Image 1: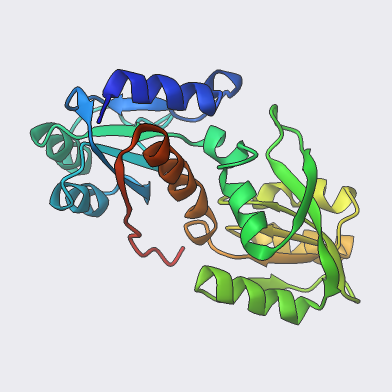
Image 2: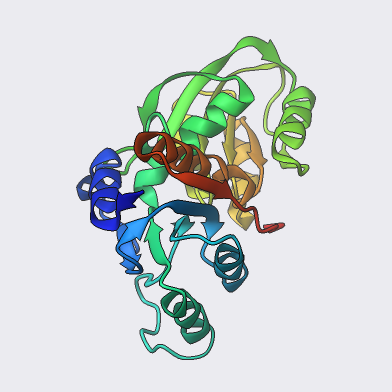
Length: 251
């Protein structure tokens, strides 16, 4: 068991949340009981995940997508009321980490995605600060068909593949979630392929015209690894119980 304040302070420091200008607050978003013995983690703090955390006996819920996004209606009504009411009724704390959990070199979504695919990471780059796009190489070049199959096997869903080049894939850049907008930066970096979670209409044309393979592997699917890796680390650090609950999302 650990004090909630200590858990939050440690996690905020580990993920260096002060380095990020984000779209939502990082860290403790909803305060529950003061002591934590069990954490539940998942990708998005939907009502289904919150309810599952209640059933699992969680003291704290750790997610990648939390609440209070920039530009949202701040009124606590409807869906927002039901989510917050459930957390507050059961005194479950909500901790959410967005960009800091994408970028962390050990427990981040991008780091875990690269590890899952067997990519040897050589660093990160991109227009954001800190940079979010990772790059690296496969130990041996693989075909686009093989990479498509690998993504499907490891993430449990077939990716969308936009073919923009010929030949095998050795160098690759990737950024989880809704990072398809970084495709031009990836292409200018000279990699053979770019992997993200989502796809936009223009992504197809950019991939084809810049001669690079693009794979949209799913926003949810590419962002499961970070929050579980973080929670597993916290469970060892503070001798806590932890449980990852995956709420299926086809997007």
